[in-house]
Image (cartoon, rainbow, N blue to C red; front, side):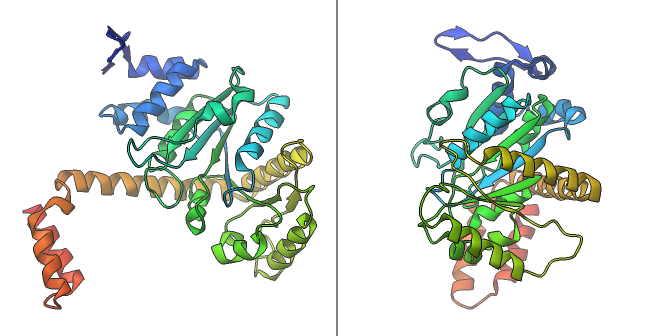
Length: 329
């Protein structure tokens, strides 16, 4: 397959998928960006891209950062990038942003909030639109992670949009999930309500120089101590940082490494990645089924069945069976 297109009235240089993959693995950011774009746009070449990348995946350490708006996720991400680079590791960042209601594109620009690293060849940054997904993760995020993994980045940081309880979706995509909190926002109680105490591998109280930070740490530690855990289970640390000044960031990097070693030693890394692959396969299969059926939401039968269910003449399960039979016929 050959990629081609137009831009500014001139024809782009043609490039095959194998050429793009080779260029991406050679560290060319333009090639990486084009592969991510193919994923995000659900290109017809996506199957070929996925097949070409598959042999090179499974090497990157995937870290998810989540938390409520205002806790300093972008600043923390930038600080972590700097710490990883100081340690000689290459880093890719997927910043999953809110979507424009008009264009469907990301509202926040990666160059605006990550400008400190824009000129570093060892850092790749990409904003992706959530496009209405409540979990804060674009549907294409798992496949974009595979692109960055295959491109040879040592660490892939996935920063989510921060939209509340559905932020737990990040746990399905990351090897290690970092939950960020901040003082003065009722975060300790909100963490329990949102269920993120069940999915965090590391808890980081950012803006630790503010009043109330130590109280948030104590509250989190108390709630984590109450949770029933297997004796062999990972004990999530509660750390404190001031991402803007860099205080405590090295301790977070050390904890990430310690968790990664634990994942390898216990076999949990393989189990998590298998669950991730299972979810990705299921999502692709369901999307393919919808495409083959021509989109169930556009079928005339759906409106008729909805009227019957609303009137109590039919139950929704029976209606779903009828719809599937009509679509398959």
